[in-house]
Length: 98
Image (cartoon, rainbow, N blue to C red; front, side):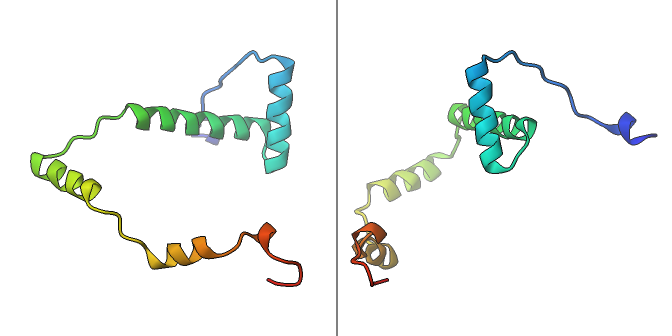
């Protein structure tokens, strides 16, 4: 069989206003991607997000109780995160430091 016969891609056609196409082309260019690659990636990412939002999470009663216990427990500071949050932002630093 030829490579063309094994291909499982499916064409997708859309009608877009000029303004939408312009912004897509601009974003694709910034990412160094083709319009097709950019739109395909964005569409798949949006589809995955929608599926994750609609997904049902099932767990046992014991698992749910453990989950709720973790959520209900007092927050515990994470030392490396506390240290990072204490640092001044790059735009807050005086020139010459860094």
